[in-house]
Image 1 (cartoon, chains in turn purple, green):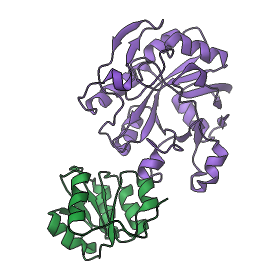
Image 2 (image 1 turned 45 degrees about the horizontal axis):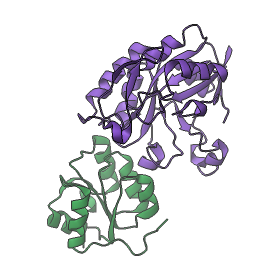
Image 3 (image 1 turned 90 degrees about the vertical axis):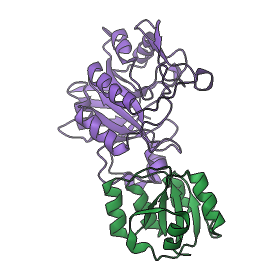
Image 4 (image 1 turned 45 degrees about the vertical axis):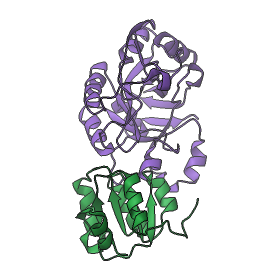
Length: 246
Length: 119
């Protein structure tokens, strides 16, 4: 077993709301400074910078989890984590087919930049990414599972774009791997007013939109860095362990 | 006013929960955040939303709402409809926006419940 530190929710310059400093080499450097072993790249409704961060992380010992933060039609944010760039690119194709045709308005939302491993601009994503797909949360969860990924309900403590705000409570039988508590809440304080959720696996993560927000927010004890192992650890199965550090 | 009368006056399509059409409507509420509905809607209310997730039925059941009007042409899935039939909560569909539907409900005399929790 290995003990690994992780931040499972990090945005890049592809997210219009992220700072311009969120480029692959700086994310990897900040991850290194924090002692991180795993970083999940989770841009809004897109995954175009995962490959660049993965390349930037080569030789650093940091594993990049290929992710996305999907917005479902219920306005629920869902982290979709995969092992490989190919998997998340296939998922991105599905998501793009379920986004409205509208274009991004950079003056309103910010720019959406796809960069290389050094941070140099390759192209702009012209889609409106800060909006809902027309995938329901149940459809999205099933599809992410079907493609080998794990879905995690993002920042359930927030009053917008969260499973609990939009849908009132966790739907019966929803097959998410965990619920995420944002850095804005203290997990124990959140759970004290949501006793009904105590049996769920939880993660905390930074939801970083700037480098200073990134954090070593989870400690995993698992065999190797993969989404399957992360899920086992979240459920404390087969000797794996997961611990919130917030 | 009963749910059935609202169906007729607003020309809504009943897709589930027919056994609840006789229920008396006490007032109205509109929101797409179910967490707000739980805090703000009152027993017997007609609830206008564009959410079509199965959780809408559970919320209506919990609060004993009179019916759910699903706006903007959104279509609830089989699970949502099945649960509404089991709970006897009418689901009424409309192509119009929530804004227009609330306006029409206001015109026929539906108001926000006075005991509405302002939390």
